[in-house]
Length: 396
Image 1 (cartoon, rainbow, N blue to C red):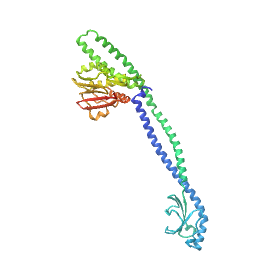
Image 2 (cartoon, rainbow, N blue to C red):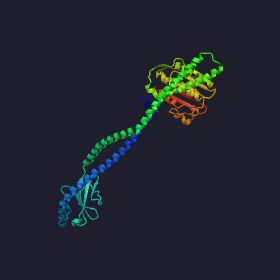
Image 3 (cartoon, rainbow, N blue to C red):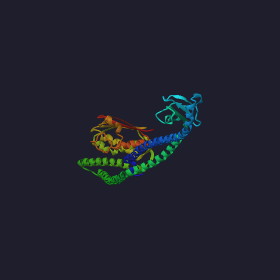
């Protein structure tokens, strides 16, 4: 997997792809539902047309029989029933005179209707010279046409949905192609930049360590200390950027880790920055606290970012309280704190509580990423202008 695929840019890209496909899929479903409804209506119309033709043909042979009955008998007991369909005779007032219909719910405004599972053909008898009567034929609807229509619509709809979804996926990939190329270019640029940054940073720190071994005037020591602080700040930012971009390409060794020893080491790393702001440390560090399964580099990133934030967002002559015991690490400062409206956002990438302090806003995001990977618990309490306390918990 490339560095870009491990970054938030890749996540945003695939989120965009999923949202596009989801919206496209919904639109396709709506269109297919509309087409399915139209097809169902078409199948219903075809069924009714088929019954209309058969009933009209039957009525042509039945009307002479009915005419003979009307002219000679009119005895309701002798009303001639059609052999093919249930038959009824209605008067001019559309009230039933005689018949054996199973469903008498009729709409005389339509010549043929489907009501409650029965098809009715209504034939006015005036054109036949038989007065203001209505002949009604009835047959039951077995629903077979509906079952067949649904099965066919579902089959064709599924195939069409899959085809249109494939087309949508191809379109989405084509639309994302320019973004992919831009991301690849940015990926190469960032990797080359971070690689080139490492050489001068390492050279500066190495030479500063060499100079510290020699007698140096007090005035020069202060200047060298400032250079070292600035260099270590850049080095920390470099380590964060490298981890964020290349973390999937880094070798991971998960093993039991002495957090106490690593914490002491990282405090020494930040010693000059702590001294520069005249910060007082309150340390309660239990010896040889173990975290059973974690990569040393990733735990270093957690400690460096928590310590860096506690220093960066602290005040001159401030205090940092660090407590470490079995299953819990807490780092608390009495600095600027975090507004209550931002506490839920501080673990998001590029979020900074105070933009005047500097940084990229990726430190706590990296902490959250690693914590999620190793199932560590994060608790944060902060009050603006009073300070922040962040605790990392794990199973001891």
